[in-house]
Image 1 (cartoon, helix red, strand yellow):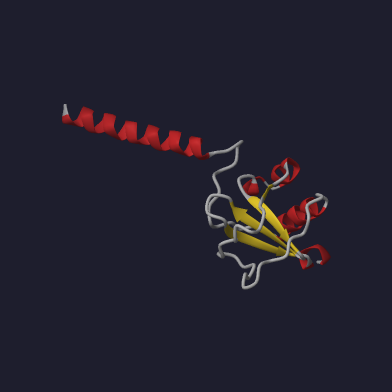
Image 2: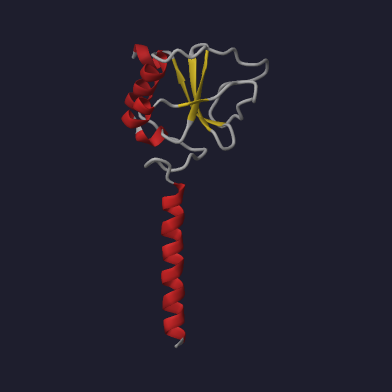
Amino acid sequence: MRNQIRTSATALLFLLASVGSAAAADNGWMAAQDRLTLSGAQELAIFQSISRQRVKKQTAPSGFEAEIGQAVPKSITLHKLPRNTASRVPTVGAYDYAMLQNRLLIVNPNDRIAVDVIGRDVASN
């Protein structure tokens, strides 16, 4: 009897974990996290795609350094990544972005942490 209960409990926990993972997915992409690893080719594809958007480049507020792991101030407007960008690089589908002068910030929308900073120089390589 105890083995049946233990087996049932284990199966229930496994089922709940599976449902939780599925619930975290948004349109086929996993939920945004504060870590993101992109290849140079992926960064280039994202930068080129975003550069085609008509989004006004913002000026970083005084004292803000656009670096991975930094909280992005609320004065910087975040935008949803375009569908074509997310379809080309699915790992960024759950993230937002902001364009600051010559830098593109990929941002976790849940806590506004910059998870990648892509410079204009990526397009010239």
